[in-house]
Length: 318
Image (cartoon, rainbow, N blue to C red; front, side, top):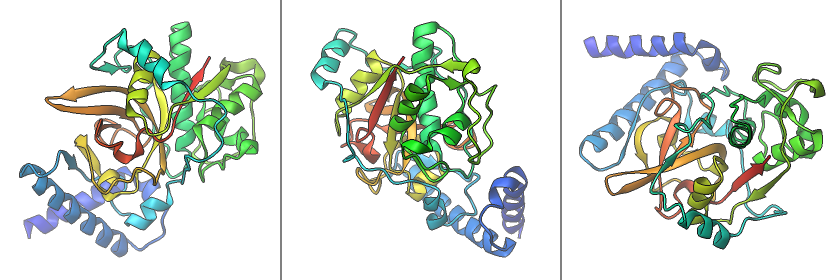
């Protein structure tokens, strides 16, 4: 009976903390609770395997607790690596530059390049958060000023290029918008609303610009590591459709079900490191600090392109 009471109170606590987000998918409280309890059972089953040393990461309940796998997947996008690429950086040149540094780890959070984690909510504009983060890093590298940039500016104004607002988009097309537009505003002057609105860009309030952008070689983890070592944070796209990703809490994420080709979620690679003999990428997500390690993911590195981490990499130059 005590376990049931705790079960119930935990569910209601999640409802209170995430009341606005939870109400997006229409269902009765009984239906939501049933889904939440089933997800909790899956989380507990996985964590038992973690305790037994069968997996390298833990799961935990979060704001997505009352969503089915299909509901969760509906918030994600679809990306193809076969779209036209106008410019790709040379893997050979990246390797040559990075070999001079010979870094075994780098974390741009500690170097001042990365703004605090935000929550995109139930608007599928991960592409805007990823792109803004990459521009923020390059702007800091050039000016020494870390300025949170406006995701809403991208959301409202970049649809003419093929981005689809809350239904998906590409970080590279966000870079192209900033090039075409002559800049992007700061978060402070054009705040995020979690919905597409009319474009309200004010050229007198430009906070950052982009001169051009390049892609990274497809499927080349070494090139991604070299770009991180020599350039800065990189916009990448990964598979985020697995329930293990939905409830990721900590540890090095390496789910064999995570697809190399089913790319669904744009994030920001901000470094790489190692834990014992295991290497990992440091990934900044846009689902708030209640998800993962204070909003970050440690993704397995050098493990056959886990989750497609090196399938789509793009970097702006300012």
